[in-house]
Image 1 (spheres, rainbow, N blue to C red):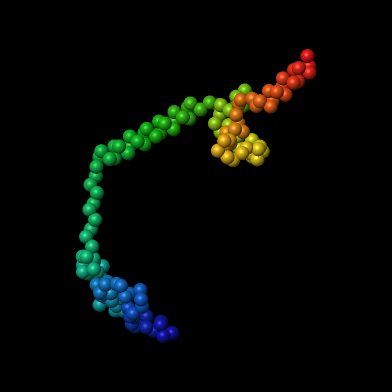
Image 2: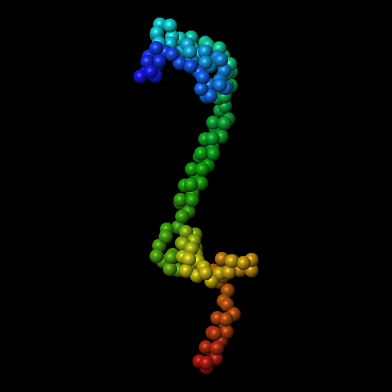
Length: 156
């Protein structure tokens, strides 16, 4: 009740630590704006003419530059052309393409590699000599070559 009565009477103080580092011009402007009687309160024009607002210089207004606007338009058109040309060059993804050469499509290649690494990743050493790429090498292993030669020798 006491606080409500003080607000209605317009009694306040700037004693808290939040107001210690504020200037006197700010406090003066706030005091003139928080007057209970509207006829004695500052109008908007009077408040803007207060010395507090004269402390700050208005920032320089950027001048209109047609070159800058033209450059932005050109970059936008070039980006649109690039997106359109990539869309037009995209090959249709068919079952035949996927069965014949699945590694030719980047998204499918990444998906296959990720799935294979998830399954066989524990076989790949993490050292400097061998890395993840070793899992996907296309060269035959010497052990497999020896097994194949043994099978051929047994079959003859």
